Each structure stands twice: as C-alpha cells, then as structure tokens.
Image 1 (cartoon, rainbow, N blue to C red):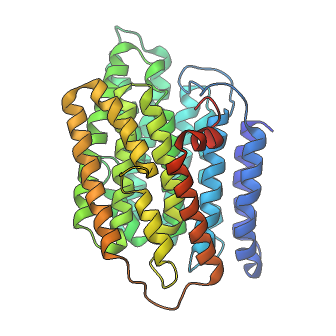
Image 2: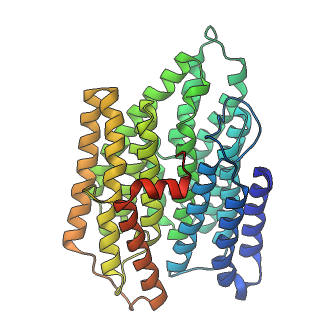
Length: 409
C-alpha cells in the first residue's frame, strides 16, 4: 500500500466509523484504530527520514510509520478510557490522521504545505463542531494561518536562491511550525482549547498533528539555503525555549485539571528547541519525549477517578524528569543539544526542564483525589498497562525508540 492509499484509508475508516449507525459507533470507534495501526505498519518503507522540502517520491519511512502506529495505539487507549464517547471523534481522527500521513511522506514542499493545511482545516472543523467557542475559533484561525504560511513557503522555495531573500522562506516555514504546534508567540489558542474540548478531541492534535509537524521540522533545515536555514533554526530554537519555560511556569500555576496540558506544551517546546539547535542528538531526545507523551496522554487527559489514582501517579512520575523516567532521557538529550549550541541556551533548557519537574513532583506528592463513581475494571487495567509501558520506556529508552521508530531512529 502506498502512502497516498494509507492517507485515504485513514479518512475512509474514520468516516465509516464515525458516521455509521449510532448503536455501533462506540464499538467501531474502538475497532478502527487497530485497523489503522496495522495499515500504517504495512505501508512502512525502509530508509531514512524523507526530505519533505527537497523533492522526491511520496514514501512513508519506518520512522513515520512507527509514529503513526504509536499514535493510533494511544488514540485507541484514549477512546477506551474516555467517559463520554459518541464515535464521531473518529471523523476528526481519520481526516487529521490522513493529513499527517501525507505530511510525513511528502516529497515536495508544496505537498508538505497542502498536507499541513488539510490537517489544520480538518482539526478546526472538528473542534468548532464539537465545542464552538472563542478558543476553538482562535485555534482554527492561528493554525490555519500557519498552514497557509507553509503553503506559501512551498510555492516560493523552488525559486529561492542565495540572492533572492531566502530568509523570507525560512520565516514562513517557522511561522507555520510554531502556529500548528502552539509555540510562543502563537500558542495561546492551545490553553483555551485544552479546557473546552473533551480528551479524544484534544488527543487528535496532541498525539497526531503536532508530533508529525515536529518530526518533520528536524529535516526542514537541510533543504534550505544557508540564510533560510539559519532563520528557521534560530527562530524555532528561541520560540521553543520560551514556550518550554512559559509552559513550566504555567504548569506550576495551573489547577489540577489543566496541569498535564501545560506540561505537554512545555515538552513540545523542548522538542522544537532541539530541532532548532540542528544537533543530531536532539532527534533522539525529541522522539523520546514524543513517545513519553503518547504513553502518558491517554490517561492524564482524563479527569481523575477512584481506582485510577495509582496508575496515574506512576504515569506522572514518567514525566517528572528524574532518572530513570523516560522524560529524563528525552530532556537530557535535548539539553545536550542545547549545550552544544551555546551555554546560555543550555541554561535556559535547564530552567525549563526544572520548572516542569517541580510541577510534576508537586502533583505526585499531593495526589489527585478522584471524584464520582469508581472507574470500570477495563479502564483501570488500561491505566496499569500505560504505567507499565512508561516504566519500560524509562528503563530501556533506546530499545523502545528502535522498536517504535525503527533501528535507524
């Protein structure tokens, strides 16, 4: 199966599962992600990460297939743990997932931008339909503007030369990346959306679209002229570090219901900062952080309930940034990249990671009293599975990365 057919399969499976008979929607919602995981793995092709802006055939490398498969598994667990589920969430998952397939396998800059635009449009439509509010409208406006900037960069890039203001293209690309991944100064929409939307709706951005854009960001500078590459990397580095520090501060100030979202936004900032350093070690750090949140988000996006306290505490520990938590390895590798870039950048990375660590340790120490009826047994079991996976990733980070993203990751 080609990458184009896989993208179509995500859209079709999501539409069929989400728009089918109402009495079957929950069952199909829990079945469809399993099919999408299998199709993603079957479509994987060997070789390194493609150069989305350098031209070439559309192909889904092993690393991208692993990301899509892990995201599919995380979405399945998120749907399983959700207290409210009507099945229509699969429409958004399918359309955004299809766009992510094209984004990760794009062989031309224009296709890369169009895929991002399709993903942002699908996400906006689903969010505004599910929870119309100023926050979701702002999300659509800002993410859509960022995707349009990527399309414009895709149109201009083939004609760029060292004498034709390549910094403009670098600027357009970085605006697109920071807008879609909710980095400062274009990230205010994410905090509001995290409050207004239900966990399955948030997960389609946090676990599919944002990771796909950030993984692609690591390969963008190599296809640009020197000035455009420097403009892209340095701006992304600055915005990523500021986002990480701001997310750390807000995770200390936020309440229990929104703390995980702030921690996730801080780590997205660190992944972006790693990409901005241009250091190869940052790729491993970014993948570890992405995998950590693919494990943590399905449980921590849900509200606390009796019976889930212990697994939630263990998953929170996976984010604390102390060894041997998986977040420690991810942030440590990003720190290595930042220190290699400059001492001041490394110091800023330490501050950002330290703020998040303090917020998570406080959460674990205080606990999260659950409200309502005890969680059903299948949700408790799913919570313990996630806690066990988080422990394995922390103890064997290299093996986990190679298993999910391939031996070349």
